[in-house]
Image (cartoon, rainbow, N blue to C red):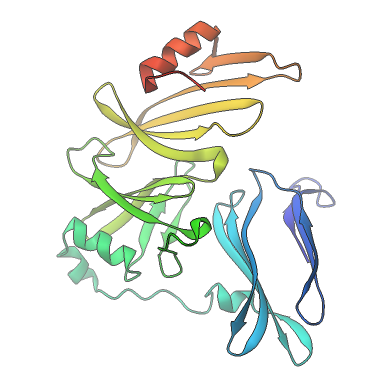
Length: 275
């Protein structure tokens, strides 16, 4: 079984991929892969019992397609059967617990609570223009599994409109939700270790930060300021790249700057010393 991404221009080439072998007893004989922050990260590989049948289950987050995924294979009638579609719920469309009229009467807190309870969906529109819907039916809320753990944080004015937005913290940073007018809208979230999300206050405004500070040879901060209509009204960046000899080139808003200028800008924006 192979997981990866084909080159769009040459389908004979694959980017990072993961290969695993499962025998007729659904026992993993070999599992190996090549991981990349731009492709696929597996967060769970385990056996489970489903309706009395033994199965092999994998789940995680695909930062290439920006989707959660899971795969499941079950042993049925002495054959390995792919039951992924059943597990992913493709045959089970989401049904809201509330009518549009009822949602319109809800307070922001009630809307957010209903979303967290898996009773309604949230719309999302990310900074790359991708749109869709998410729900929390399969989310983990237990600290026992940090690979699948979400925690509700204190609300904060994230879009500079004088009203509170709602925050869920995950292993990849915060997810930001605007709850009003009968809808829950997620307008920012982290997408892996290469795009960890948080918020800061800078020049009397809230900025959403996407940062990559954990990979060798680079360090990146991309900041966005939203307005009350969830539109990006300002942005800036600060980053450095390192060549093969360990020499760094520094940038502010995509313009090359000196190391001292980089450090001064970092302290001005974030405070403290740069990493």
